[in-house]
Length: 370
Image 1: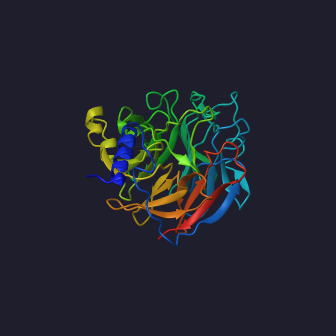
Image 2: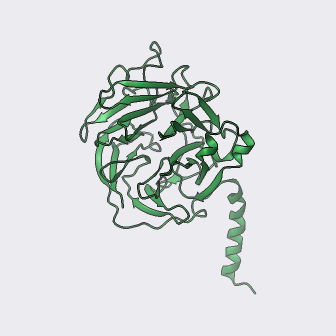
Image 3: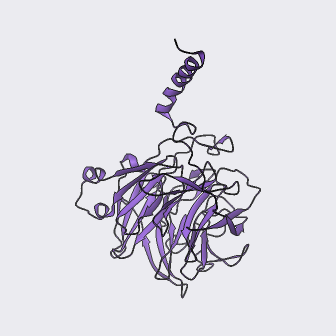
C-alpha cells in the first residue's frame, strides 16, 4: 500500500510531466550548479548608457560597445578611460549615424567588439536597430565587420555582409576568430545561423540556418521572480547567440540564449564548402545542458565560462565534466559578454536587458582567473 506522501508525489509528477514536454521549467531541468568560493567580483567601470560587448587588448586598453536599441542612442564604440569616462572610438565620425549617411562607413547598431593578439580591434555591426524590443530590419549596406588598427586608430578593412549570408532581419551577434586560417565565425541571434567569413577573400557563407542547434529552445526563465518578457508582453525567442572557439580552433561552440544546450561542430567542417546541408548537420555534436547564457568564452586554462543570466552568475565548465557556479552576485544584472584580459582576469559586462527602466548603472566587472 502506497503512503499518502508517495501518492501525493505521484500526483504532482503527473501534473508537471506534460509541461516538461512543451517548455523547460527551471526547477526541474537541470539542477542548479553549486557555487565555488573565492571568486571575487571587482568593478572596473560603470555607465548610464546600455552596453553589451567588451574587449580588452594585449596592452590592457578596454573597449565597449553600445547597441542602437533606443531613440537616445548616441555612441556605438568607445574606449574606457577610467571608471566613468569613455571616448568615442575610433572617432566621432564613425560613431555618428542617421539615414542620410553611408551605412558602410558609420556604425549603425554595434553588438560586439573583439581584440586580437596582433593589435586590432574588430567591431561587429549587424546594422539592425531595435525599438521597443522589435528589430527594424537590416539597413541595406550596413551589416559589417570592421577591423581597426589600435596603434593608429585607422580602419584597416571593412567586410560587408549581404544576402545570402544574412537575411533582411538578421542580427549578427558575436564573433570569434581563427587568424591562422583567416576565418571568422559569427552567430545570427535573430534568425538562427552560423555565418563563416573568409577574411582573405571576404566571402561569407550562411550555415546551419535550418538546423535545430541554432534555434531557440523556447526556454522561459525568471529573474528575481519575474518572467523575462518583451516590452509588448510576448516571450522572447533568441536563437544562436553565445559563441566560443577552443584553444586549438578545432571546435566551435555555440548556443541559443533562450535555451540551455551547448552544441559544437568541428571547424574543418564549417570551412568545407563541398559539404551539403545534410552532411554538415550530421557533424553537429551535443555538448551538455548548462545555463541560459548570453555570452560564452574559453579561459586560458581550457574551461568554458558561461553567463548564467537567470541566476545572476557565471558558470565554469570543464568539457566532459560538471558545471560550477564560479561567481554569483545580485550586481550581475544580466551578465552579457566576456573578454579575457592579459592581466589574468575575465571581464564581463552587465546589460540589464530584463529591466525596463534601470535605476542602477550598467557595470563592467573583472574576476581573477584560476
